[in-house]
Length: 426
Image (cartoon, rainbow, N blue to C red; front, top):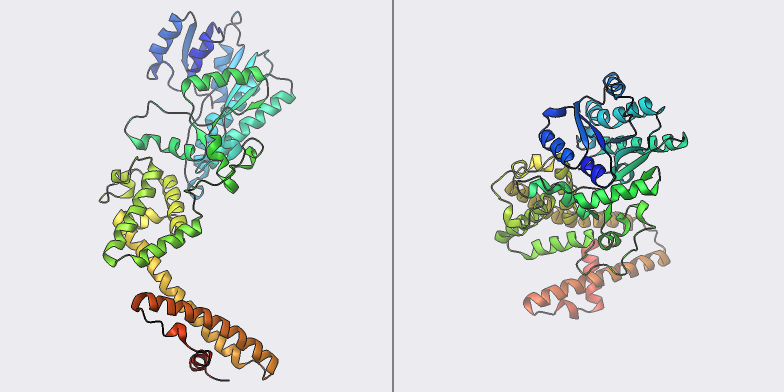
């Protein structure tokens, strides 16, 4: 794509295309034929740019009468994973074609009079990226190298790209999980035409580092505290929150209330819809009907990164503390539903036990209050207030259920006698 653009838009007459596979790469012969048809001369060579000696030999073989005048370094390999899984070897895998190759190209060409030295970096080096600690670090190095070259008076442009669309990835929604995730974060994937326009614009600007991204300003404006600080001066916060927005704590409380008001036979259906809704969102499916309850999460397409996002969504929806290994511990929708049901209902019981435990502590503390009329009067007044709130709430519930309003009409003396019965007398 870049080779074609250099020929058609920038009039580059000769291209040396380097990859590990060289002429054996799928489509290489067709690309050379296409570039030839556009009036350019293209040569495809196999070389490992992470090997400094091999790269030096390759550059030395460029004819003196057709010298190298520009470099575009677009190599890169992804090896995403949650941080504990990113071993030194996995960092090396990503750093090789990004960091090592870029540094070799810099050193081996710094004495040449180049018109352009373009590094394909990534916005992950600026914003970070879920599961991409190695990739983000490698691209941050490219941006730093660009500033280093500019300080030395050398040609350079590091392009910290946002996400690109992947129209060639067939096979349904799973081929677009990363695009869906980044779109939810406010970054539109770039198509080929948009990307190449931004490539030319980046060269025209002349800055050592540029950030070609397509932003969804409306979505970003609604992110609130989650908006990346780098965008605070660029994105205007939304004036009002969308009507569908619900704080996580409120959503979790609403779920508990729904389960409490739902018959036991239907609770699993509520939780199954919840699990499948978030699974569909993370995997990029259009509907929860696409999530087969009989299939395991790994079979549906989850990996370590999407598993963490799924866990985070369920944790926010339920208010529970859930482990990062959740889908491996509970590998199917049914197992997940059973786990969430038990945890949510146990938590409600635990809340009641906690209140009773605190009352026991209160009784012990009350016995220690000095027989001072002022202290005892203040404590008694506060207890009356609490008991009044509790009693009237209980009376309202009883009246709703039976129509009996006796508690709400209890006298003050009756309420005080009840307090004595419950807590004892000092």
